[in-house]
Image (cartoon, rainbow, N blue to C red; front, side, top):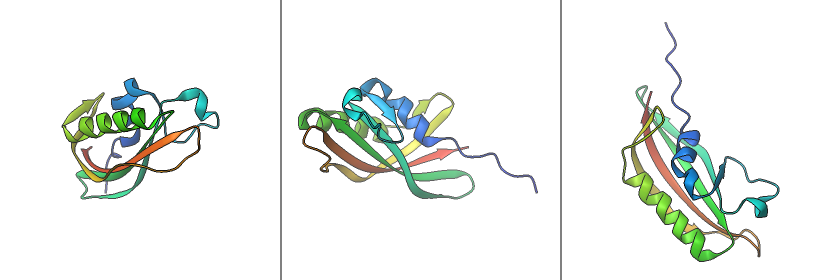
Length: 123
C-alpha cells in the first residue's frame, strides 16, 4: 500500500488569508501587546473521508479595543464563509461557522474575540 499525501496545512493557509488584518500565529506571543492586532489560528480536531479534510479551527483576535476585535473577527468570518478561497496552492472549499465571534476575557489591556469554524480542504 502506498501512503497518501498529507492534507494541506490549513492553519498556515488561513493565516495567509488574513495576514493583512494583523500579526498572525498559532500561539500567543509573550509580548502580545507589541503585536496587536494579533490573530491566532489553531486546529482543534476535525475529521476526514480520505479525500477531504474537515478541520475545526479556533480563530482568536486580540486587539486594544472591542470595536477593532469585533470588526476584524467579522471580516475573517466573511472571508472564510464566502469561499471557496485559494490561498497559495491550498483551496479552502467550504467553511461553516460553528461558534460565531464572541468576546472572551483576556486582560484589562487586551480584548479578545474568538470564533470556531469547520473548513473543508482536499489534498
